[in-house]
Image 1 (cartoon, rainbow, N blue to C red):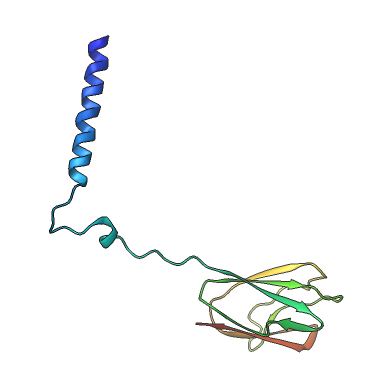
Image 2: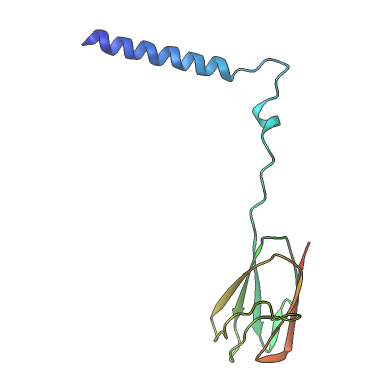
Length: 124
């Protein structure tokens, strides 16, 4: 029984030595930090508030893939509608409700319930 345990320990030590040896690099090889691809930046979260019959900020600059949360802090319901083709829109949101949009392209939008409310998302 002890010889089986010793054999397993020896195999483990040999395996560990091989792993360490393989991970050592010569001067001609790139380090793992040099050869690893650059980390992609994670999407950021931005907020646009609806209050006093306005979108705030009225214009927001973001990166493609960023998330934008629209938050209604007004006493009346609002929605968010893409302006040119009406390609997307949120449901009407009461005070305290939110809606999230993932930014894919620059877009003008407005509240279809209150067309004087306008905003713009600029994807850089």
